[in-house]
View 1 (cartoon, one colour):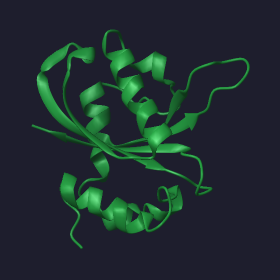
View 2 (cartoon, one colour):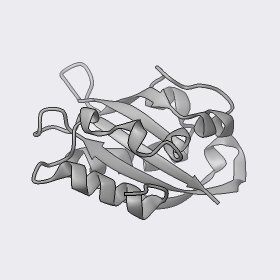
View 3 (tube, rainbow, N blue to C red):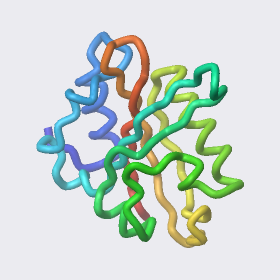
Length: 145
C-alpha cells in the first residue's frame, strides 16, 4: 500500500487498528510512509488526575516539515506552551474528543496561531492506544495547501 495522502493514512490507521479501539504506537512504522513522515506530529496524552482536571498533551516527535512551519522544534513541550489563544481551546477540544471517543478526525485550519493566517492545511488526528483500552497518544498528519 502506497501511503501518500490523508485517505491512505486514515486507511493505514484502520488496517492497523483491526478490532481494537485504536492501533498502538508500535503499530505505526515510519518505514511504511517515509514521504509523509516529515508532516507528522506525535503527542503523548496526559490524562487528568486529582492535581489537574484537564488533559494535557506533550510533543514526543515532530517531523521536519512541521518544524519548518512552526519555526522551531517543539519536541518535549506541552500543549499550552505551543498554542496561543483563541486557537488553544478549539484545538484542545478536538484533541480531547479524539482521546475520549478514540475516533479519527480531519479538520481544515490555518496557521493563524503562528501569525501565519495565509498558510492553510488539513490535519488528520489519529488516536493510539498501547493497552487497547485507553488512548495514550495522538498521531497527527498535516497536509499544507
